[in-house]
View 1 (cartoon, rainbow, N blue to C red):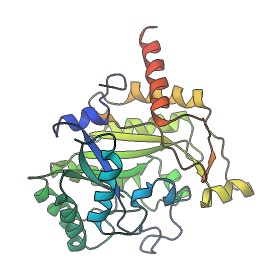
View 2 (cartoon, rainbow, N blue to C red; view 1 turned 90 degrees about the vertical axis):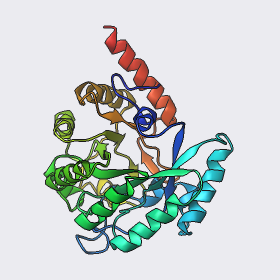
View 3 (cartoon, rainbow, N blue to C red; view 1 turned 135 degrees about the horizontal axis):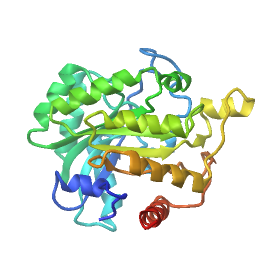
Length: 301
């Protein structure tokens, strides 16, 4: 098992809940976000261009079943016996009426070889009635919820136009845990104005919550985002991560994070035609290999 130090990776985390190999398939529901549709704000997060993390097989607003079947064909070339999680990822996957959402989730679970759901959303978009329905669904199917927390620093959240607070994150995590549903948090390392101490303080705050898994990635400057425009006009300071500096931070996070919390990943890779920086020239697995090598070196010192 490819652990990060003492921490399970995503495969290790899933092995506690599901047998065999399981792969996420991203699903595009064509839902928007509260900080795009005006219910919380306008313009979205300053760093976000949704095209930068939506796989090609999920970009068209096809039916849920069609997207999942296309995703299965994509992965079946190498892994014919794989099982799948329907990953409701794009924008805010719970930004709709509960009845509509549950119809989509149940449709996904009817697709052969789809054994569960991974639902990505904002911490201020988990109403009690939806959580109750997910709790009922989780009695028979695997369900996990990933909340985009990004940072525990409210000043940073305001700066990047998240339109929620860390208190919202803590509340959503606790309620979801109490419902018996595994909880993940998504964090971004290197947001404007944050230094190493700020980022490690976020890890300390994560440790205080009943979190099961985290995934981190480096801040990427992406074309078509408000952040790219702010950096270009000089209104926001931005220094791209150097690879060695980011690996050093990741080692600190591994050491700091509570041992029972699994780590899904530390990097993300935007499409080459959208990415401005940082450009490391590494695949995600190559980065993970370098990080694990550094962790081994540190453990032997």
